[in-house]
Image (cartoon, rainbow, N blue to C red; front, side):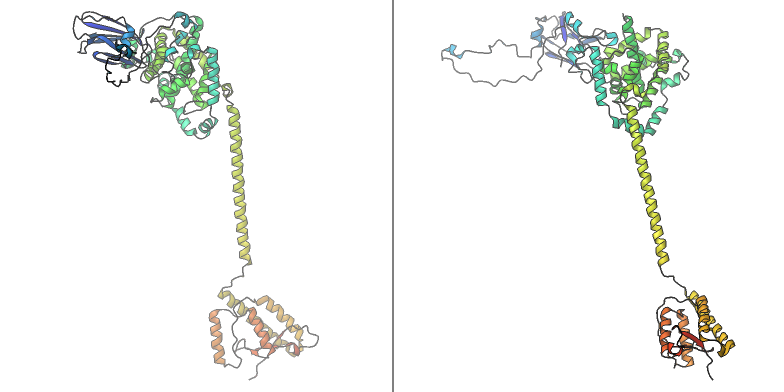
Length: 593
C-alpha cells in the first residue's frame, strides 16, 4: 500500500481533508469514519489518521474528486460543533497508530527505586497489526528531470517510481523511469523472440483453418459505417448516451507538442487502435474479461511504453506481438486488422474517437488497467477531437499503402512453413506407400486363394458322374459293334488301341470311395437291385474300381456291364502274345444262350 500526500484544515463545524491520489480509479473509494479514526482507501493508496478530536458521519459530509489534479476532497462534520482540533499540521503524529503516542519511557531504570518499589506485575504487550505508514515526500524536480519520459506525448515521468510494485501487471517493462527508450525496444524484441511458440503458430495455421476463416468473415461495426473506403462519413457516427456522458466528464485542455512529439502520438494511436480492432474481431464484437489484457498486451505503446518512428515499425511490432500472445495467432488476422484500422481512419476522427471511448470503458472497468487511461487513453480522447481531419485521412492513406510481409517480423515464419509442408508431404508419401503395400498384400492373398482353389480336387456333381458313366458305356458298345463287324480278322493290338482312344475321349475316371463289387454268381434280379442302389449314390467308375477290375480280370471273373447287352471280359497278360507290352486287353464277346 502507498501512503498518499494529504492536508487537513478546519472551520467551526467541519474538518476538511484533501488527499492526493493520482492514477487511481475514480469509481472506487472506501471511507471509514468513527470518532477519532479516519481511514481512506483507493487502490493502491491507503491512509489512516488518528485525529485530535472526534468526527461523525451524519449525512452532512461531502466529497469531490478532481481528475486532472488527482485530488480527493472530503468535508466531515465535527461531533461537537465549534470544537478546535489542535495539531492538524503534525502529519507524522496523525499517521501514528492509536495508542502509540504514550509518554511512558521505552526503557525504565528499576534501580532508581532502591529496591523499595515493589515489582509490578508485567502485562503482556499487545502486538500492533496495523499497517505502518510513512509521510509522502514529493520527488525533487532535479530527480524528475533524470527520469525518462513516457505516456501521451512523452509528458509523464516518475509515475512508476512508487507504483511499480502495485502496477507490475499493467506493463511488461520493469523500472520504466530509469529505462531509456532504446533499451525498452531492445528488451521488447528480445522478450517477443523468446516467448514466440512455433507449435502454437502451426496449430492455428493448419488445424484451426475453419475457425480463423469464420473470424475473417466477421463484419465489425466500422465496416457497416463506411463500406466504401473513399467515403468520409463523420456525420454517420452516432454516440451512445454513456459515451456522451463520458466525454462531458473529460476536462477540455490543450497540448503543447512539438513536431516530433506529435509524430509519436499519431503512431502510438495507430498501435492502440490496431490492438482494439483485433480484440473486436476475435471476440466478434462481444468484449469479455480478457479484452483489457488483449488490448494492452498487443500494443507495444501500452505494454512497453514504446515510441515508434514509422508506420512500418508500428505494423511490425503489432504483427510480432499478435503471433506471440493472444489465442489466435494467424498472419491473416494481422493483415485484416491493418485494413480495419485504415477503414476507421478513412471514416474520420469521429470513428477514431468512438474506438478510444470503447477502450476507455474497457480499461475503466478493469483492475489494474485503469492507470493506462490516465497515461494515454484519456488524453487521446481529448486530443483527437481537436486535430484536423486532413491528418487523419493522410494517415489512412499511409495505412492503405503499407505492406507487411512475414519476413518483416523476423520470426522465421517462412522457414517454419516450408518445414511443415515438407513434413506433411513426407507423411502423405508414407501413407501412400502403406496403402500400396496393403493393396499388394491383399492382391497376393487373393491370388493365393485362387491358386488354392485351383489345386483343390474338382468336385463332380452326381449328374455329371452319371453322364460320364453313360459316355463310357456308349464307348464300350461301340467297341462291341466294331468286333461284330470285323469278326476274327482284326488283330487284338488294333482293338486295344481303338479302345484306348475311345476311352480317352469318352471315359473320365475320378476319385471316389471304393465299394465292394457284387459277386458274379448272383442272380439277375440281385444284379438289377445292386445297380439301382449304385445309381442312387450316382457314381460308377473310379480309380479304385479300375484296380478292382484288374484284380477281377486276374481271377478270370466276368463283369456284367449291362445284363441286357453283351458282357465284357477282362483277360490277363498270359493270354496275350509274347510280343505285347503288357497292357490290358478289353474284348467283348457274345454270351451263349
